[in-house]
Length: 189
Image 1: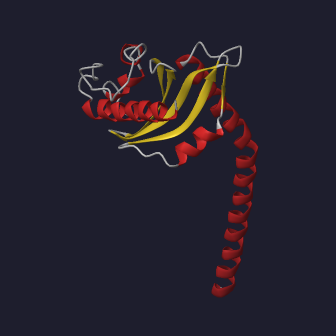
Image 2 (image 1 turned 180 degrees about the horizontal axis):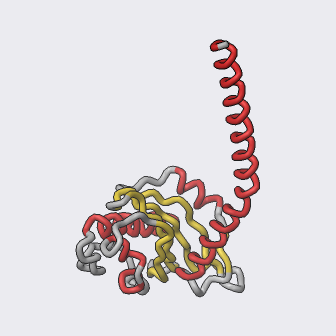
């Protein structure tokens, strides 16, 4: 009786696990495409915010190739697209970059840089910084400092822009991300 009960219980648990796994897989497959579409829409909206003069954003194979071998201290440039005006002329670039050394982990930002090296906008895509401190990086007061800065060399915190009070680690991480973006775009311009 004891051995049969164990086998029966094991079979029941196996069946429950199998059914649960199949259900999870089914739900994942059903939600995967809408989640990816929502993420892509959010990225496109952020790109439009940081480069309002662009009509669209397009990939460039030479830029993708250059990006594959690009390295930067404390940041990873993940995507660079050309910002194109209504006539089809390239007017700059939008850059998606992740600062690896934020206080709460990675900070993903996107920024626009025109052909003269001027930052057209800055937007935080995702972060896990401390509420009330590092999370202030999403506020207009902080983000607004960057639009209009012509970055020909590395930006210096508290010289080119003001750091977030009480959030030095977050500010340093964002500085590295911005400098990586500027460096990459200056190399492919």
